[in-house]
Amino acid sequence: MLQQLIPILSAVIFTALAMIVHELGHLVAARRCSVPASELALGFGPRLCGFRWGPISFNLRILPLGSFLRLDGTALAERTVPQQLLVHLGGIIFNLLFAVAAYGTIFGWLNLLIGLGNLLPLYKHDGWKCGVVIMRSLLQKKSQPAEWVFTFSGCFASLMIVNAVLHWFR
Image 1 (cartoon, rainbow, N blue to C red):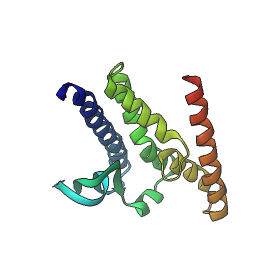
Image 2: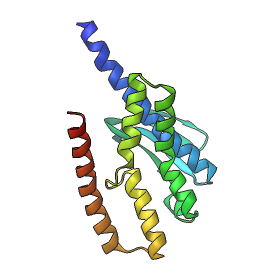
Image 3: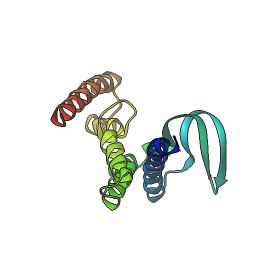
């Protein structure tokens, strides 16, 4: 029985570690661009436990469905477009670096999957955030209609990309 649980537990632990790697990438990029962060969390919902290290609270939350880094959005919006893109891409960059470093392992594949998955322009994912930063820069303003069109078309494009990838691996 325990032998059958080991692969499942390994996948859960390595997925959690890959998500933490992703958020640490955002944190390093945010620090590099002087964007304050207040919390790095694994999971969503109510806080189960955590600790504070300097200005950042590291927390484990009750719903293990993702991770996040709470950034000062106002400070991020005041940065240059390349700095904003670096902060949004920091997690992907870290995931890809760890994927290369752990090549051929479950941890390497999970980092690759999380990094590439976050490139998709899905709402609130890093690819979407980068697209919004670029769109606002090109338009030189916020445009809710343009952002809605980008959000819906990005979702559609993401579905098409995922479908193509799944068919490619068949």
